[in-house]
Amino acid sequence: MEIGGGQPLFFITSPGNGPECQLSHLTLSSAAPGKFRSFSRQGKKLSLTQALTLAIQAPLQEDRGSKPSSCWIGERERARERRSTREKHRGISMGSSSSSYAPKTIYLDVDGKVQKVAFSRHCSPCDIKELLCSSSNIPRNTAIMMVDPEGALVSIDPTMPTNSPNSLYKVISLSTGQLGEKEDMFQNVAEQFSRAFRINELKTEVTNRLAMLEKRVELEGLKVVEIEKCKNDLKKLRDEMTSRGGGRVGNCPCKYNFSEDGKKLNPRRDVPSYPKYTLSQETIEALKKPTFDVWHWEHNEMLSCLEYMYHDLGLVKEFNMNPITLKRWLLGIQENYRSNPFHNFRHCFCVSQMMYGMINLCNLPEKMTLTDMGILMTAAVCHDLDHPGYNNTYQINARTELAVRYNDISPLENHHCAVAFQILSLPECNIFANVELEAYKQIRQAIITLILATDMARHGEILDSFKHKVDSFDFTNEEHVTCLKMVLIKCCDISNEVRPTEVAEPWVDCLLEEYFMQSDREKTEGLPVAPFMDRDKVTKPTAQIGFIKFVLIPMFETVMKLFPQIEEIMVQPLRDSRDHYEELKQIDDAMTEAQKKKTENMSLGGKKK
Image (cartoon, rainbow, N blue to C red; front, side, top):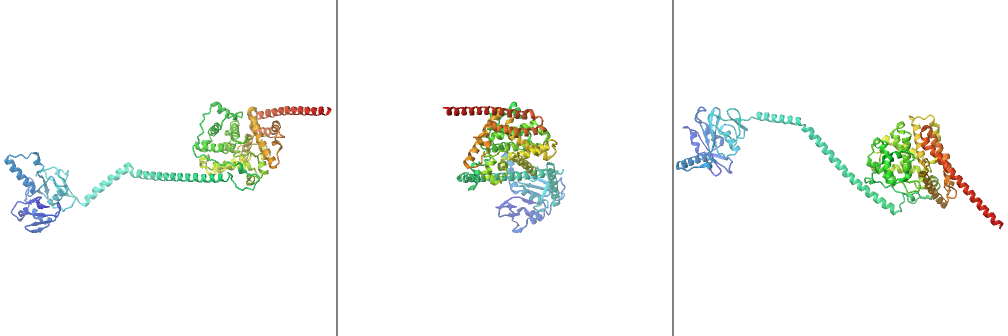
């Protein structure tokens, strides 16, 4: 048989006298190497099946131990063997190189008959499989396997081990059913592995997590875009307001436009940078007492003290506050207090520290909830936000924007509430962001109630209500507790005289300075002037005596009925302060009388002359 250019690949012989012996010159024609096209015998074309059938029709009927009945061997290898034999006879040694050309021979058991198959060591596994199929009467392209006498698999490739006629290989055709069984077995093994290692569950979990991460990355990207957009919008708005003169409301027909003293909210989006102070144990103990000296502290130190109060009372944990948000909120609060002589950030700290002191002195956490503590502290911090330095009487008489907006009803206190919740509406400053909606509504309403209670126009109403409740006060009664909280913030708001004289007296000077600024403006604008604000009529002793005697002492003595422990620390200092200013008034009166007599004497002396 020849391939390609007509070179013999192998030939088939069958010993005997039949016509099959004439197949030694069977020729293969091929258009391309390795592609079988046609067979011919003495000029007559044959198919591969016909050619092979002729070759194996008359094999010798011999036992396995006898000589093979047919032989399949490459003609090229036979030529090499003959050449090797001749060279050997001539004394030429082929060495190791000759062994690489020697054909490989195996013996097969085909239906109880012995077949000898020889092939080149350079044949491909596909060629060998086709050769084995042909020699075993198995159709081409059929899946086969070869086993040894013990049933072990033998690889079908040029490296397969040779055997002898006494140890025959057998070619077995693999049916579709057998293949299916193997596939089922492999599938079963794969499923067992999957179950053992939870591959499907892990795959699903990884897929879900990747999807979540992708969504989160996408949302974060959108946030960045939104923040940049907000920054640009704020910048445009700021520039526009600056170009209009900084007013919040233009062309207001009011005689005095509150926006002239306007201060825009300036939220802090960066992480607060004020230094973290470590408070000493001495400072921590002093913070809990009404005698705390508020004049020794810078703004950053006061911020740190306020931050400590929220942590110490457990408010950060109770409301699940982000500590960074708490810092930003406190900075926002500080920035929205103006630089007035009295109503400034130091006054805010003073009131908040007194509230913290009363909470500790009266053991309020044992009688009220932590939510109540948070409401008291937050209302104290926010109670005078953006105070313009002119009281409600001026706002109403001057028909300012605030008076018009709030219909002359506590315009300043309403404004303080509005600014407080404008700051809290900023996500980066919302210390109640993690509170449920219904709880937040209650907290907001309670804070508004307390801040509105600081309007001194309502002093008599609130104190009378508390006096009616104090003798039968019930901490489980919500109305009673609300009334108490209103009285407590009022006490803290006007508590300067509870402090030592050296701490309290500078506050009187600051308050009078602010009063005098207002009275001067009222005179300029032709508005009514309150006598206690007129610099030509009021003195420090006269301003304080009436306030202490008729406002402070009655209110603190009423609270003392519920909390007797405040008498020594808070009520007695008020009595001492009253006595102090009465002594000062007597001195002032004596000096005034002496000056008056001196003036009269000088006048009489002039007339005698």
